[in-house]
Image 1 (cartoon, rainbow, N blue to C red):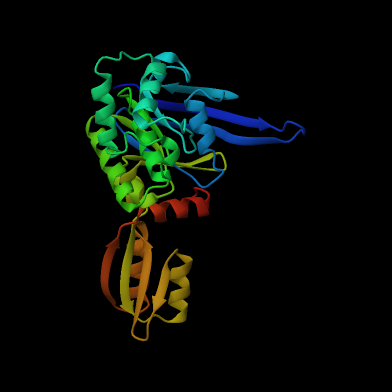
Image 2 (cartoon, helix red, strand yellow):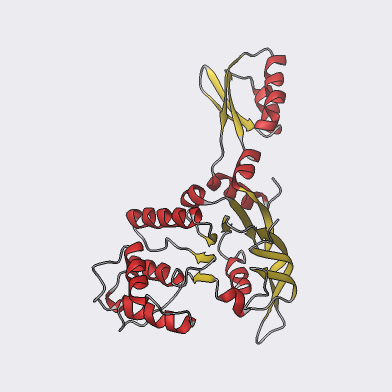
Length: 310
């Protein structure tokens, strides 16, 4: 079995106030792994510790304790850096350059062989759909065009691992669709993609694995399919319930909507039999029962609200 592309083991990061004794724990014993070839969504609300984690795996920050491995190397190791394409959430490019000039600069800085440089840069500009703007100075780019150029820069050396922080930020719906298609292509090529995003319906379309953190703690990690299956619910339609039965079902974790004739009961799939038996034993009929698949957004909101305890 190949070694993980990214691995955190009991990682702790604490920030010390510059002018005070206040210590802020950004990460508390975080452990997770991302396998080669996976698309992993790294999720959490603002302030959860995502930027700190990305800074650690890129070698920009240092952990207080624990171990991090990136492509089987310590963070910051030049052997790993040569195989990583990075797109930060906030970036700045030289505004007086054109896109081809900027990409030539980054290619020179990477110390990669420059054979076929012109074709490589032309192909990347086409891939991110910036063709036709080759002579336009970057200072005149829109936010969406800057984001496309950032992706081109991240792909410049044909990296094995892509670390993308909000890759669809600033893009219109068509632009986000293009980026998702590009990520799907890279996934099919066997690239490992570690991405952070707040647009969860888009993440759900592309990712294999999900890691959710909040306030420096790991809430859940696992395959997308397994996590959503664990959060599956069932809709039970029954004849209108009396107050006592409704109260009992709510105590068992159900949510209930009643109309004059019917009741719609939504409950975790693991408790559906228990709910149906309660309804029958109270003398009410079950009219229908339908599975409800959770979405990633619903699962994420529930995890954060429950502190991972669900």
